[in-house]
Each structure stands twice: as structure tokens, then as C-alpha cells.
Figure 1 (cartoon, rainbow, N blue to C red):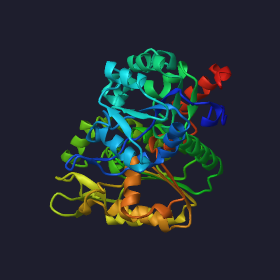
Figure 2 (cartoon, rainbow, N blue to C red; figure 1 turned 180 degrees about the horizontal axis):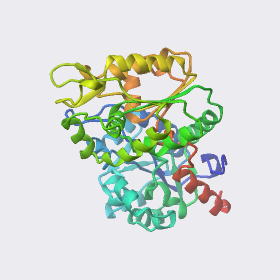
Figure 3 (cartoon, helix red, strand yellow; figure 1 turned 180 degrees about the vertical axis):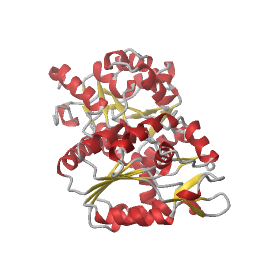
Figure 4 (cartoon, rainbow, N blue to C red; figure 1 turned 90 degrees about the vertical axis):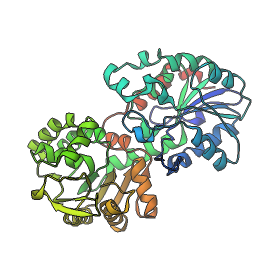
Length: 419
């Protein structure tokens, strides 16, 4: 047991049915119908191998995309194929989650066999909107359909989804109420590393926050700023645009429509409050880039733009590179722009490259950030690459994550089941 949580060393999985919740969520290329980056799938391999080789009848669960990132919302059939190739062993797949077909397939598993269920977010109770609106307790999550259908078939539950540990959803916090539970090897490693980092970070500490998923950034900024964890927060992506709107700057109708479409306008008041208290620590872009007809850069005082903003501009890149060079510790979550396209990749490429060559301690997290690191061949330039973006920033803010709470509770509840 570590940190009050059971590990894989605490149970005998031989011939037992094990439900393993992973985070295999990967950037997805709709045009070519394939996964663009498989870093998270590779990171899950040690736990899968260990459980299978221990003789477990292994049932894998994961989400892929969802209501907050619908562009990545597809079946996990692709993941089964990738896992089979990486493991050199057949990973069976069934396009069902907890229905009769899935339950029969689980009942028919033999020792060492591996079955991947379909995308758990096809179940409404696994969606973020369900989580945010209903705010169910762990006990209530254990009574949801997916947990009630699958838990009776299993002997153990293993969570290796650290990247989703900041979520409170049935497959993440419900099974622990009913089954002896443990964290997988990846979860154990990331929890250990981030625990060490959060207590020893050398100042100045800079957070580089961007991307399109800004919900978790707002949930942690107040805390890291008020407690002196962060010395500077460099904003980019949609996060920066929300801060600009909070300052009353007209960023242009096309960009505003994206903010409203993604329902991110609800964070404008949060941004106003943060700026009123910590304006000297929040750095917003000096200029932006639009790329509808080739890359065109515009200063903030030249806004609004008739085209959607897709990147930060060269002046901002220069300013941010200076801040990164002065930092002793850098935490990164989210690309600066639409790095998948050549015209709008400059901000992400330049800033990530600056971090990689700087003499500081650097941690990068999140699926898109990892994809960018891999695209530019910068893996060896970062001190640590964390599979989770939202989980990382929430953890570093000092908040105990829901999955950590649930696993600790389960360890206490089933302390005599360690056989």
C-alpha cells in the first residue's frame, strides 16, 4: 500500500475477474479515421501486461472523447487493435459496455485473456455534463447502471486512469464502493512523481496554460496564485481569449462564437475576479495570429478580427520565451494554438522548444500537449511527461482528486480482502 491506496502488489489476481479503468483517450483524426497519437495507450501497457501475466481475466474500460471534446468521440475499437499490436497478444473487443453481450463476454473469459469494452462515455452517466449537473456521491455512483451491471461479475477493480483522476464518474469512483480496489502502475508512478514535484518546486514557477479545455485551469488558478505556488501564468489558446473578453476587449465575432459555442463564456466572470486580484501575475498575449488566408498577425489594439484567432503572435512568443528562460520550474498544459496546422503551429512549436532547451525543471501534461511534444521531437527536453493535463493542474493546486479519495476509501473498507 502507498499513500493509503492499494497497489497491484496487495492482491492475488490469478483466475480472478479484474475490471481495469484506463485512460486511453487519444487525439483522433476524423479525416483518416485513425488515432493520431498513442502515448497514453503505451503508458497503460505495464499494468495490462502485469495483470494478464498474473492470470487475471482482464476487462479493460476507457473513454474516448466526450461532451467536452466531441471531435475525439469515437469507439474504442481502434484502441483494441493498437493494444494487440503493442502487446503481441490478442486484445478482444466488443461493441457493448454493460449490456448482455458484454456481460456474457466477461463471463467467458479465461485466465490471462483481455477484453476491451466500448467507449464508456456512450453511457450518459459517464458524461461530464452528467457529473457537473447531478454531483453524485461515491455511494450514489455505485448505484448507476454501468456499476450495477459489471461489479457483480468482478473480483477486483484497478484504476490506472490518472489522467482522468480529477473526474467524479461511475467507472472512476463507483466500483471502489463495491470491490477491493487498487491503483495501477501508471497511476502509482504519476501520483508519486507529482507528489514529489509539488512539495519541492523551485521558484520562480511559471504555468503555461492554453488549449481548448480550459475548465480545469479555472478550477486551479485561484488556489495556485493565492497560495504562492505560481509566480506567473502565461495564457494562450481559448484561455487567453476568455481573459481578453474579461478585460472588455472585442476579439471578433468568429472567435467569440467559438467561446459561446463551447459554453466557455461562463468563465468570463471568473477571469474578471482573477484579474482583479492577480493582474500582475496573469500574462495575456500582446498579439495574435489568424490563418484563414495564410498567417496574418495582429496586435491586440487592432482587434476585433474578422477571422478566427488560431495562434499567438510573434511579440507574445518572444515575451513568453523570456519568462520561460527565467523560470526555475515550468508546468505546461495545452498548446498555444492549432498546432496541427502549419500556419498556426508557431506559438506551440516555439514555446515548447524553448522549454525543452531551457535549464529548468519542466512538466508537460495532457493529450494534445503530448502530441505536440512528440510532433516536434522534444520528449527528451522535458523533465517529466504526465499523461494527464487536467488531473495534473488540479493535483498541483493542492486539491485531493476524486479518484484518489475513492481509492483510499476502498482500501480502508476492504482492508481484510487483501488476498
